[in-house]
Image 1 (tube, one colour):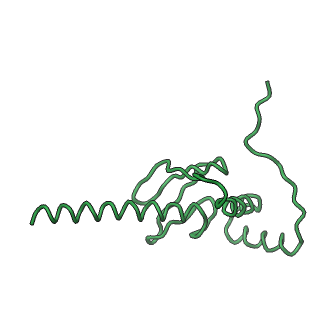
Image 2: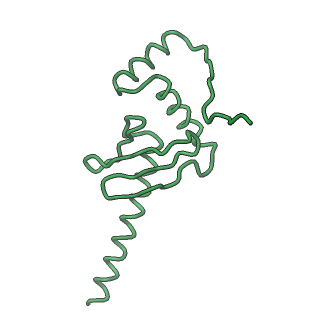
Image 3: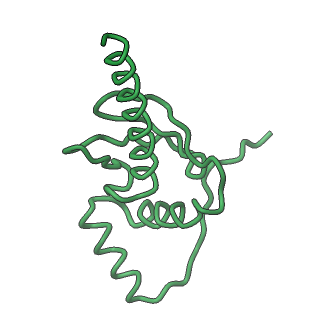
Length: 122
C-alpha cells in the first residue's frame, strides 16, 4: 500500500515580473519562494475555510498554532506586544491575526476576572 504524501507539486505559470517580486520578498524575509507562495495562498483561502486554525500550545511569549490548510504547526511569538509568525516571517499573516485575536480574548477574560475580584473585595 502506497502512503499518500501530504504535499503536492503544483506548477504555475506566472508573469516574470511577479516571480521576481516574489523572489525579492522571499529573500527579504529569509524564506523560500514556495513557502511564501503557500503562505500567501493559504491566507487568501482562509476566508473560504472554516476552522483553519487551532491552538496547539499557548505561553505568554509564544503560541503554537495548527494550520489545517498547510498541515503544519506554526510558531507565533510575541515581539514588542505584537504577534510575529516564524513561518511567514510576518506580523500581518493569517497566523499572526489569529493569535492576536486569541490573546485579546484571553486578556479580556483576565481583566474581567480581575475586575470581579476587585468588586468582591470592596
